[in-house]
Length: 385
Image (tube, rainbow, N blue to C red; front, side, top):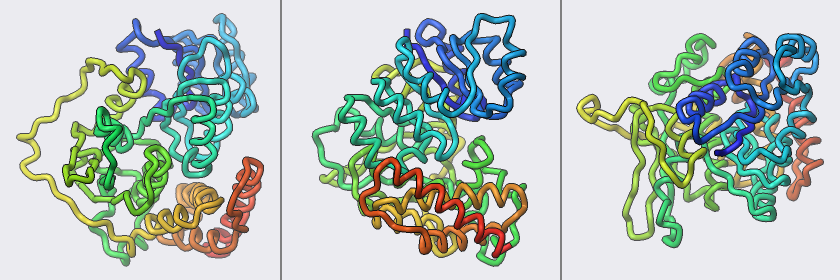
């Protein structure tokens, strides 16, 4: 029985993680649930899974949450510091980091220092502070198990191959809803169009990142840190059918691929149960439905965010942190109709140029960088509206 803390339990990954738990009640028990603003769903989850602790990151919602759960023997906490504290609780074996964005960094560090295994769905943690996180995981002998479908695929392809040098990984991308649109057409797309991903059901922020291909840029950075690769060893390949979730090429030229229907419960279950595979009820891959699998090179002129990610990781230091902060600002602005789809990339580029670069950042430097980059990007959003 593994006791889980699920950070971001009301989001897409969090809710699907709870589905995996409900299908395997003899293997997993929910010890802690955390969320931000979706109190109604959090209360419903608490009633169903009866965790020891429930936390809302939004302290203003604490009274509402406390009142809704007063009839249950559940501890109710609030605030970012409370989330960082809950992951350190003794009974917890694994922390599922399904929070969105920069907010996942602090609790992930706290969990690693407490010796908890990490099921990582919060890619921004490694984007912002990959060197720090991977160093801490080695120091505390804590495994980081990938939940993203692409990184889970790479992890599965490497199983039993740890001693064989990797020549490169092929990180597949669906191409998102705007794969075939021209630059002129991209200038006019709406958030409603951007939120209609052709293959995956995800939260709003990740879906917009997928439409702009920033998500794939973040995944490239995440792959660098998870698997100890150079950026040149990570090739992004557009694969519209989303059947091959990623591939690994070894130095003898052999390529191993992991395939399956687009369903996040598979990589979630693999991370929770590793090294065992759990029987699940998800749809099986029917090759008769896919008479052809196609592949394309990504267009980094139309989707500049992917090129910014490569630039940031090659520059190193706090540049990926700047990239992430600027992106979080512009995505929020786009979702609230304060900026255009292509203007997001313009603001990110200018923020990367203007924010102070630090070659060897400390944790405090990451905090300061995030604040500075957000301020720059916010001001640019107003000016470039």
